[in-house]
Image (cartoon, rainbow, N blue to C red; front, side):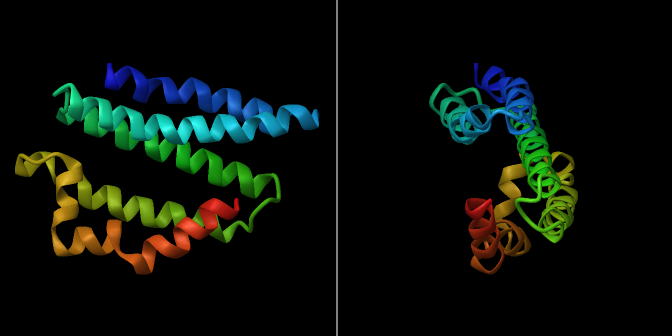
Length: 142
């Protein structure tokens, strides 16, 4: 069930893009609650997987893939629409690439990708206030 929620975020993302690029102001306004639902779905899938004992390597990889797809598409879209400077998606893409490259070694070590954030380097890249605070502020502002 959690993987279905994860994967259902992609069609919702397509709907959000249609709303954002619509000439109708009402449609553009509807994109805001749709984006909030998209973000809540990310929380819901992981919570549900843990509660139902459905945590798996496939689930964690799908979650990361869906997270990155949503994140990258929205940041690039916001820049394309002129809502944010282009440098923001560039920084997000570079950071995401490094984090995902580091996470890619997890399966070879018998770990789920999210378990790597328990290492000092993982905590620095994923959970460091130095990286997360400006990132979160920009995300909220967009």
